[in-house]
Amino acid sequence: MTEALFAFACEDLARCVADPPERPPERSAEEEERFREAARVHGAAPLLWLRVRDRPAWRESAIGAWLADQHLWNGRRVERLQAELREILLAFAGAGVPILPLKGSVLAALYYEEPAVRPMADLDVLILPEHQEAGDALLAGLGFEKIFSGRKHTRFARPVSREIADPVREHPENPRLLEVHPRCREWIRDTEVDLTETVCGTARRGELLGARSLLPDTDALWLYLLVHATHHVLLNTFRLIQLADLVRLEPFLRRPEELAEAVDPRATYPALALLERYFPGERSAALRARLRERLAREHAGWVAWADGLDLWTVCYLNPAPWRAG
Image 1: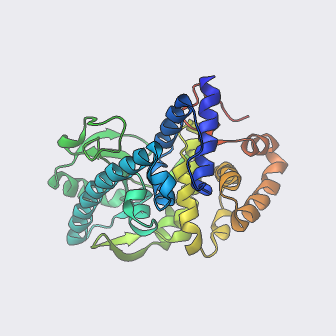
Image 2: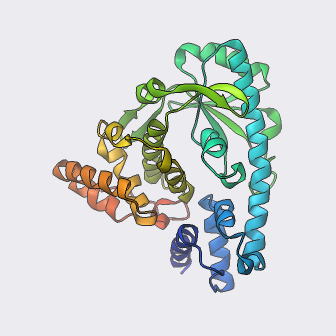
């Protein structure tokens, strides 16, 4: 029963975000509890509040008060993270060391109506290996300590941001990590998909949060987010906000299909299938159709698996993680 309630809550959440009704749907106490948990897990509570806060029935409801609270605290957290990112960008610009913000670091500041709408668990930046030593020294000077090193990224944190202050809100004092990527890459099963040349080769000089910085090209960022989303699908850690990120970028895209054609379609097709299921659009539908044709020739099982994905299946609320066929 619990699994069915969570599955329903995920679908209910997606419907509300995509096309919110004039008033909150009627839910039992247990359904309401599951809806709130789904909204937290999928990082969508602040976004849903943005969509419904001008509607009186939502503002006057218990769920509306909860959404407003989630939006408020997320705004405080994002403000703190962006202040730290600005410190980092100013230090790197002053030292002449290249740094490229990625994912939420760019999305919250440039592509959302207001930063408080986009939750940020951490800050993601790209520092190429040839600049790693200089980057480590700059981060140490800002009080960041290296706490983890892996094949995908190195994590840094300041000593004051390592304990959970509030487990049910995006609290500013919850752990704030900095993830430094030496390359833009993900692993799809055992296959490495490296987009470093695509992302770095199209980056431009600009300004972020009042500091000089490299900025990713929108087409390259969209492709990177697609591959990153598929990586999370395979880990059962996918979130609805990842689809919202892709939707936010769409008005700024030029020809991302050309970049996508050069990438293993297994790395983009699952995320496109979810995008089409919950936020259908002509561009993503056309690209998905082309990729399906390519995949069907050698990986028909992958296509069938991806076409059956839903939010419940791919998020960590699902207690029995599946694996692609």
